Image 1 (cartoon, rainbow, N blue to C red):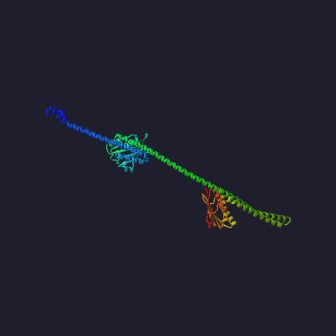
Image 2: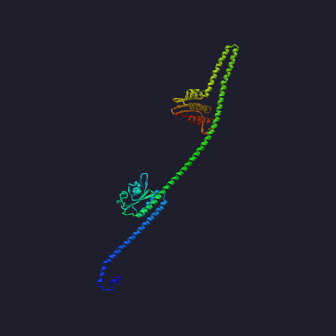
Image 3: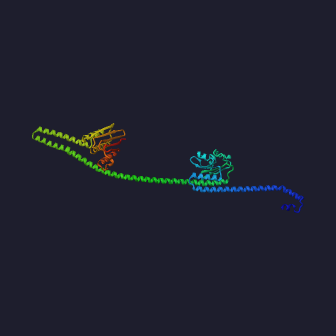
Length: 477
């Protein structure tokens, strides 16, 4: 209708003007049709691209949102990074996604999490890159700035890796906490020109979220470690308090037991002293005193004989007096030796023990022998007297309680230790059934106290019906 209005209306069909119009529209019409179709195709492509860009932006925003939700809920570093690389790879289909963390000690970045075809090899061998010296990621860790490379073959910073041979494009952004770079977020594509500037913005947002999450995880880990340390310290303190309390209770019980033993020992000591005084008094009364009395009678008889001019009888009485005085001297010597034998000070322990054994055998009618091993030497005076008294007390116990037939004393002189053992073949006893305050037991306590006073250790072995063995070890170093 338009063509008729413009060309035919009011004109003949064969007119030149009509023919020229038909010719013009015949030539130009197809061009305008092609141009219209081209514009329409471009518009359609632009609309499709806009839709794809919108969809890509939507995926980016969704990935950022999911990452934000995940990083706030995960406090384990490996789990956190593993979830993020999987989310990014699944969302955008990147060829390779990885997180590197800075190792300040070695000045390197270390692959901590990755996903892609090279992941098995990375898990086996790992990957460490020098900061500032190796790869795009190393450069990012050095500068703290993102790097977008849409053709890695043209970038001198690119680090070729046979484990990711199809990489064509790479985008790396830093993980930053304030001014410090703590890691690098790296994505790679097998397509050229795979990344845009808005990808840098989105990945940097994700990287910042991950950096904050890493810091939160670190703080949580430190807090948990500190809490564990506090709990351990508290438990250790409680245990030490319990142990110390138990030690104090044991020490208090031990002190009470020691106090009781000391009281008993004091009572036994007083009794022994009184018995010793009584023995000395009896010895003096039965021995020296009677001899002195006899001597006085003989002297009076000799005096009377002289007055009666019986010189021969007087001389006989004086001879009797001389014999009595010798007996008095011998008796006094015996009493003195019983108190502290001079042989111990004059000749040492070994001769004193032999003298003591011989004296015991004569008085108690119990066979007693002494065996000396090693080279006898003089010990410190306090050691010699303690050993002598322990042997003396042992022999007293044997004569009073053991009903033994034989006693064997072994003295072993070694370079670093002196050992003495007193063994009898008497009735023995059961130590577990002997009362703590029994006389024999208190004698053992006194002997043990003497041994401890010179740094020695005393051991008592006894079996009912099989005798008793007392061993004393004294260090000489």
